[in-house]
Image 1 (cartoon, rainbow, N blue to C red):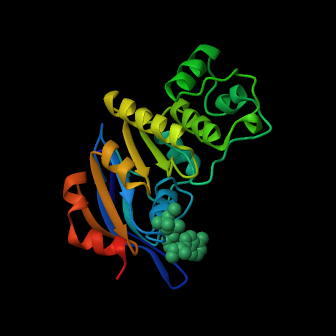
Image 2: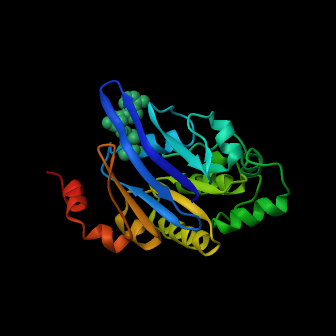
Length: 228
Ligand SMILES: Nc1ncnc2c1ncn2[C@@H]1O[C@H](COP(=O)(O)OP(=O)(O)O)[C@@H](O)[C@H]1O
Ligand SMILES: [Mg+2]
């Protein structure tokens, strides 16, 4: 098992943002975390990457307990991620943004940029890129960082249809390479076409776990999405 989440709970004041949440992430699979706004998806990402401490539960990465470790320790143990609101350094070049992830050759940087369909000169400032291209740069940076688990928080949010298609291909290629990915995504078509397993969260709890076919026809899932 790549990641194991057991009975994790996190309250913000009176809000049970994550409530006795348990699920596993299998190696070499793309797992999508979906659910209505406020379901607790981003909170769970922040918990896994150590940005938010938890009240209860355990999180294990390849059987190693990482519960409430500091973010840099968790990153060093092999979790790389992107953010819902992109965090590239706009006043730095593409190359320097990439070098923040790992000190490496231009050759490796170019190879990874190619794999995310970002074909721009390395000295281009991030501020000169479109929003969607900045998101691709952020994914490239997360890919360059040594990792065993890649986590992407809503990669398609705010990007145009062309980049959305490219993101689909990027994920399908990652799957072919046997990468392990945890993805938060709103776009159901996107989720259905790239995921092996879908975890549906609602009000901080796991509502359903299954493959795309099992999830789309589930009554509880439909209710959560259509609203009661
Ligand atoms: N830092 C915080 N302080 C207080 N409440 C928070 C905080 N972060 C998230 N929440 C609340 O926790 C719940 C889950 O939020 P979030 O994880 O952002 O949901 P999602 O990403 O699924 O839309 C929401 O009710 C949200 O308002
Ligand atoms: Mg979110």
